[in-house]
Length: 100
Image (cartoon, rainbow, N blue to C red; front, side):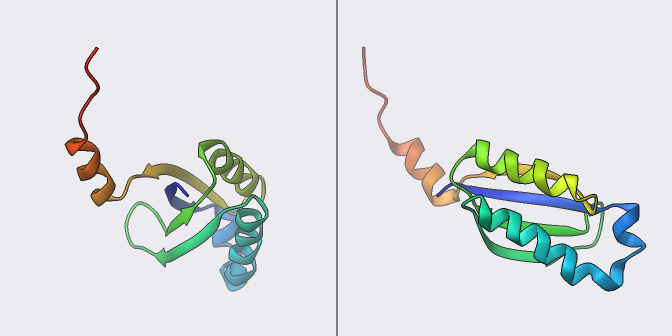
């Protein structure tokens, strides 16, 4: 399954309810899993973003839908990036392009 990186910021609403962060994360996880995706890793990070999530999803449409549904909860605003494992990228560079 394709990999995606979600870089999330807590909204003002979420910051005012940090004691319920476990519930906010569980609700987001339910959306992810209900849409055929799986969280591989999740981290609280310092800097411009608050949470980094690495997930597998069926495709870009599913990843976009997940992002939109999580945003409607009002706790997270995120940027979702497609990720290609470096080994796969290197292999693609070695593949011959068919000649016409």
